[in-house]
Length: 238
Ligand code: 1GP
Image 1 (cartoon, rainbow, N blue to C red):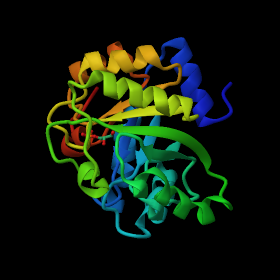
Image 2 (cartoon, rainbow, N blue to C red):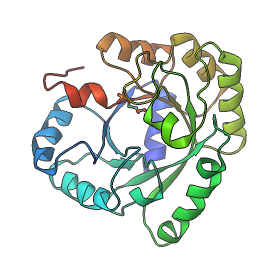
Image 3 (cartoon, rainbow, N blue to C red):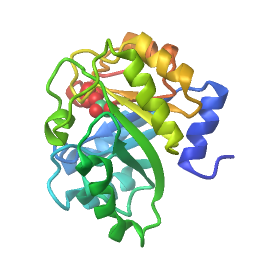
């Protein structure tokens, strides 16, 4: 039995079991809707609720996660746009470094700013290499981080970035096409990255259909994250 969320993901990855996370953005999701939303997430057999966004108002994540926890038994994993989105009501934190970018703010500065909170926090901290790939839109991550995404065609750069992340000690690699991406990350890029790393791979951004979900899984994603398609479609079913 896995003790931590990271171990759970590692074990699933080793067994070839595929995982699903639903991403909720506290800025776009009304608290009153959380009971119904939690029930919908349960029906999807999702494994995790991810919480985060690029423009979340300061301080609202705490109450948001506390409220979700009343309605859902699923582990809540923070996927923060910045250090103000931390709360001890969650179970774990993706401790992200935006490896595709060259902006020190998202490579180390935000991480340092989070330490006064994290030093006294029971959150499980999961070192995660975050790699932004061009999803055909000016995504929020692109805008807030002021970094240039890697082209979908530049597979060798995406692979080398992921492998560098692994060598730096990241425990997960997260390939991100950006929330609301027109084009999800292509199969070839996912499979090449997966071939070259021996840590679990998360893929997200622009996944709207079951075909796209399975495509990501079949290409090598261990965990897929879906946000916009779940938000926009009440009947959304995978
Ligand atoms: C998670 O940002 C994504 O990696 C979520 O993207 O909102 O397009 O599903 P969507």
